[in-house]
Length: 342
Ligand SMILES: NC(=O)c1ccc[n+]([C@@H]2O[C@H](COP(=O)([O-])OP(=O)(O)OC[C@H]3O[C@@H](n4cnc5c(N)ncnc54)[C@H](OP(=O)(O)O)[C@@H]3O)[C@@H](O)[C@H]2O)c1
Image 1 (tube, rainbow, N blue to C red):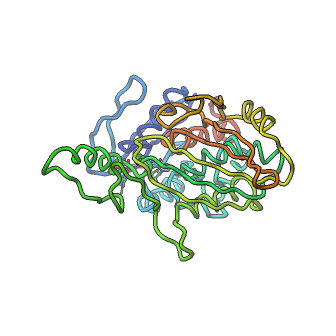
Image 2: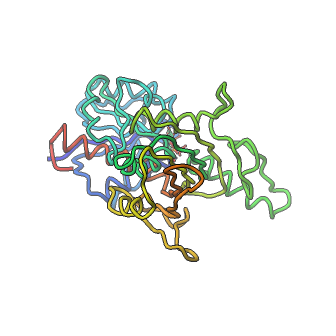
C-alpha cells in the first residue's frame, strides 16, 4: 500500500521536477494526479515512463488524497492550499506564503526533520527558498560543531528560480542580441539579463534589502538557530539552472579548514569537491540534475577570528525546490503517515 499524491503546478519548472524526482526515488505512489491551471487542462507531463494528463486545480477534489506537493506561486497557494488541507490532504508548499507562519513547520530534512510533527496545526508544511535550502545544508553540520555567529552570503542565482518566464527571457534575449529586429526588452527581469547580472531579486524592503535577501535571513533562523546573524546580497545571473553562493562564516569556536572539510565530507546531502587546482571546484552547469549540495573552495578567512569561506552550488529546481519537497514527503510518510516505507 502506498500514497495518493497530488502535484499542483505540474506544468511548471518545479512541478515537472517533482514528478521526475518522485519517480527517480521510487516514492511509494498508489495514485498520482498532475494539476495546473485551466489553460493547461489536458497537457501531458511525464511521470517516470508514464504520461499523465493535467487536470484543473480549481475543480479538483482533494478528499481521500494523502499528500499534495504545491508549486503554483503564493497567490494560487493562498486560494487552494487551505482547500486541500481542509479535505485532509497534507500540503507541502513551495511558495513563500506559509514559511514564516509559526503554526507551519519550515523543513530541510538534513537540518530539522523532527519539526515535521508541527504540521498538524494547519495540515501544511513549508519548503524554503531555493537559496536558503542549499546554504543551510552546508551550514548545519558546521554549526553543530563550532556554533555559527554570523554569515555573509552573496548569491549567483539562475533564471530558472523565477519560473518558466525567466528561462524564456534569457533564451530569447540572448538569441535576440544577434538577430536584428528580434531584440527582447526586459520584462520578467528589471534589466537586461543576457550577458549581465542584476543585484535585485523580489521586491525592495524598507531597509534597502530585497525580500529574497530577507528570506535567507528569516529562514536560516527558523530552520537552524534564531541566534545566527545573516546578511545577504542576492544577484540574478545569466545561468539557466543552478544557484551558486559565496558564503563567509564566523564561528564562536575555532574550526580549521581541514576539519570543516572532513565534517562536510560526511554531512548528509553534502558533496565536497575541493581540489586546489584548475577546475577543482563545482560550477552550476555541473550540478544540474543532481541531488547533492556541492561545496568547494573551503578555506580559512584569516581577516576575522574563527572565519571560514566556502562556495556552495546546487540545482535550484532540485534541492532548492522539488527534491526538498519530496524529501519532506518521505519524512512525512516514514515518521507520521506510515502507510508504506518512503
Ligand atoms: N524555481 C525555483 O528555483 C523555486 C525554488 C523554490 C520555490 N519555488 C516556488 O515554486 C513555485 C513554482 O515555481 P516554478 O518555478 O515552477 O514556476 P513556473 O515554472 O512558472 O510554474 C508555475 C506552475 O503553477 C501553475 N499555476 C500558476 N497559477 C495557477 C493557478 N491559479 N491555478 C493553477 N495552477 C497555477 C502553472 O500552471 P500553468 O502552466 O497552467 O499556468 C504552473 O504549473 C513558486 O511558488 C516558486 O516561488 C521555485
